[in-house]
Image (spheres, rainbow, N blue to C red):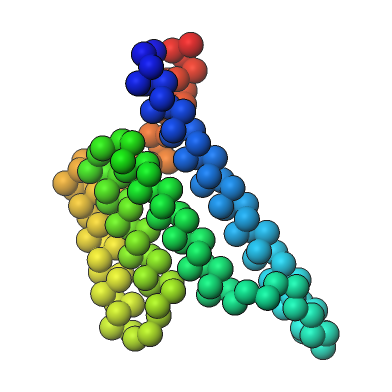
Length: 143
């Protein structure tokens, strides 16, 4: 492996670690909210987290878009551009759910991006997950 390949591999590993950290953080917040709701069902008014859940989702999705944008800059592929657009549209749908027409437009846009990914880029809809496991097994066999 040359230095550039090692650098790219390192950056991709860091991006993956950030994705996992964001997912674990969001999972912890959801667990705390679940405890709050359960206690509220029994008549106890307990507020463990002071931030509104919509605000938490907004921040989390912004972080995810930032990580995906970084991966797009590293990979320089059309597939990574489509993934960034998917997350950006999903963020708009989750955070700004004002009108039903906006939701419908978002669903159609995501469907269009999946169609682009499948038919124009030649990958399956779940190619990101399948390719990552293949890449990891290839990396292990290279060593």
